Image (cartoon, rainbow, N blue to C red; front, side):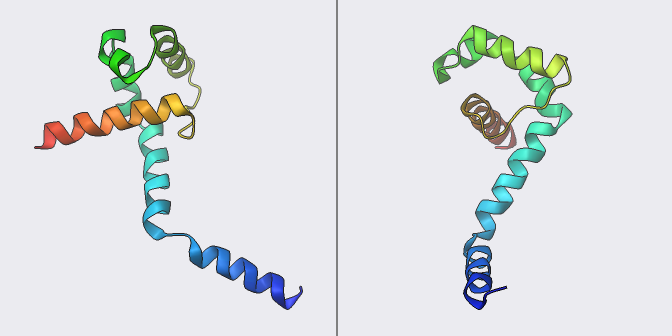
Length: 94
């Protein structure tokens, strides 16, 4: 392997911030959790309307959960729901 390429790989690996990687893995753990799925299934359209989530999109996400499909933590709608979930969890803890 050329020497320059190996250095590039090492630079790329060390440039990843540990915090952002941990947040990424935590997001995936949360999105896969039964607690998160149950929470989404309990949501009503009026609970998420102010976050820009339509009733149709909420139904789609619920249908995915009921069918046993994985939610993608990189999709915008899931990110928004995840943020709302975190906000509610923080409010309960305080």
